[in-house]
Image 1 (tube, rainbow, N blue to C red):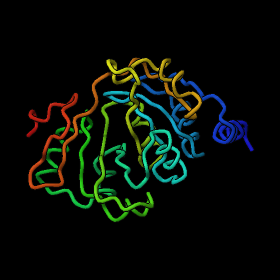
Image 2: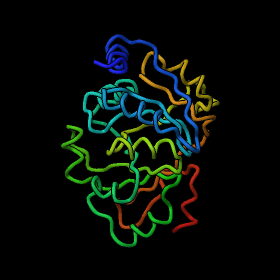
Image 3: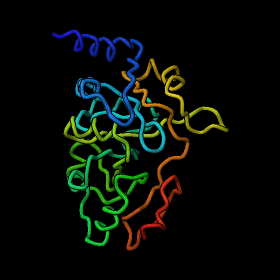
Length: 224
């Protein structure tokens, strides 16, 4: 067993402090992305930057990791409302029931970008998660680090936002502060520079017309 595998095992099973990894936000170093993917594929939970706020996530295909993520976020798996970080539009089609041509044109204009799009889920999603989910949130963030992670891993991250206990500062922006808050709950925190404090705009595509259900950083009116 390699040293990294030993460290992964100890971190996941014996609550060792998380690894803190600085990654260039515009040109992520391949060896560091490989390290992140290794942690994920060994069942780890990571915190990482996006084009909006810092996110917390794990390998979608590792059900045990998804259960850990739900526990950290205090979410029951049956009430799972987490999003998938995908790498491109082709990736999305695997997890969405259907994308009509007008909707596809909107996606091409808006992604990568600071939006989360809600769709009816494909039959594959409940099989992966082990829970009956009729809808799924899809993200393709305009940020090199998460895109590099997902492309290297070959499947999506399942993800949620990092929230702050501070009632005024809702979202943490400093990766070092985030590390101090989560170092005994997750396995790796990526320092990709200061994060934003405005989340993605959520648009629901499950009805006859798209509906903005949370206004965030993205301006959907520009595209529809």
